[in-house]
Image (cartoon, rainbow over all chains, first blue to last red; front, side, top):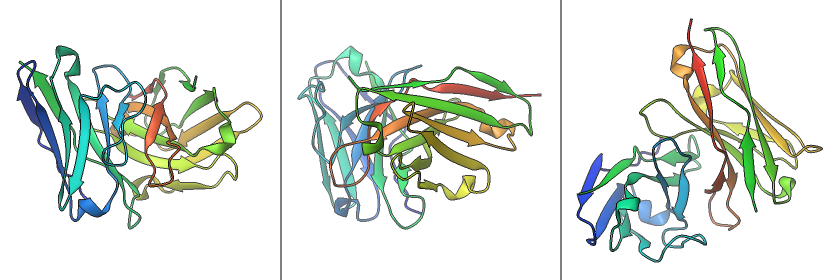
Length: 108
Length: 121
């Protein structure tokens, strides 16, 4: 089955840029989607199709995808961005919807 | 606005079955696939399966096949997830989520609030 690998944690100071990676075999050939989840809440879509943002998501959130790594970039990080972040792809070979293990973003 | 409203928390004994509902509003129910995702305490997200509300067709993750049933009632815009032969490993928050509108690959643009199912003797 297809595996997505995320770092367990990323820490960043307010106002700085956070980069959360999602590794997978030839992930650049897939569409990658990103969610954030705050404690006790449902996940929220923040980036879809590698780099598109749903309405209501700030421009500070951006995505890229190439080779074996997709990246979610959060510019000018705010305290409210502190959450768990999950990447997701669709892989038709086994169980189609695959999630990364999640990355806890801590704002220092 | 799109809303997915799920049924309330459940407590189940090992070996029992659970059934969670997900009522959709704010869009045409049969136009978007609905997915089920669960999250065990302190763990990540796990895809369970999907239902096409128009046809009723389903696809479930390998590990749940034989134990999971996904259905829908289009007259009340509601989807259901049933899981049988529960064990403590099934203790989790269960989410329904709607497929996004683009034609690339599925993603989940709206989520229900989650339903906590606790399996304990």
